[in-house]
Length: 210
Image (cartoon, rainbow, N blue to C red; front, side):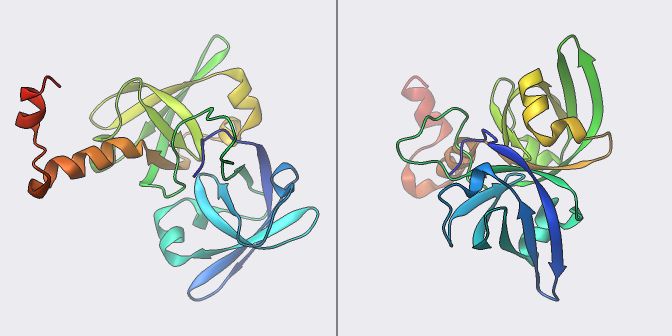
């Protein structure tokens, strides 16, 4: 489990592509503190398992499913990546619940300065946008952000200078692909409402004052 608070920006050292997967080597510093084989590290919002590490880098296997459903397949040596270790039980919950299992990808369609902030507009599929709500939370490349605006085909976020400086967002350009993970609570609520065996329906909730 992650919070979407990026700890550092690492850099891809190498990508070894195999017929059924790839091995990613990433140069890092902060996330290597107290790292162990089998630990989880979110790479641009995608939960990966550490398979080996040194004092300055770690490796992780990336399966075809992940390559097909995320932007990791577009990474190249030298690409910057957002990194976050799994949240410790006694840690602060600074962002929102992020599983590292992305729902899909979006594409940057507009970048607009607004004083010290920068607005990013992301185009995404309707099937994903149904879980995106104004003032709700979303993870973009593993960054916990608040949705400022949403339409039938895209949504926008306003990025503060600190986030611009501490993540890969400042390197994003119009047309770039980004990983998206919507707030998991909405997906669970929808599934419960669709399950007749639970007895929870929209009518039931209305009767109970919700």
